[in-house]
Length: 60
Image 1 (spheres, rainbow, N blue to C red):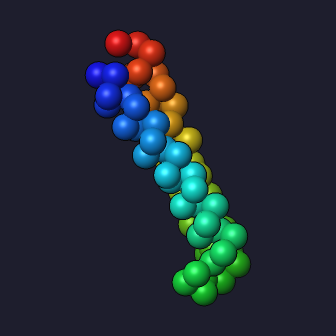
Image 2 (tube, helix red, strand yellow):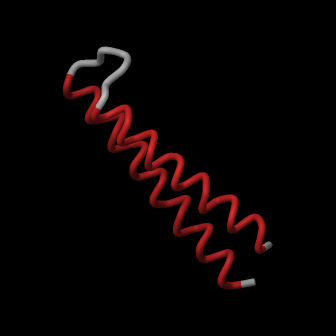
């Protein structure tokens, strides 16, 4: 369970990085509102995955 928690933490960090990259760099040329939506989605997913992984890692 420790490794599952660590993996979820790393996936959460990767989602946070992807959200910031997609929101700030906007490589696909989205409108500002759509880029903000994509950024917020990835940031929310990253935070949830990170804390879920942290919870699993500490619990078991």
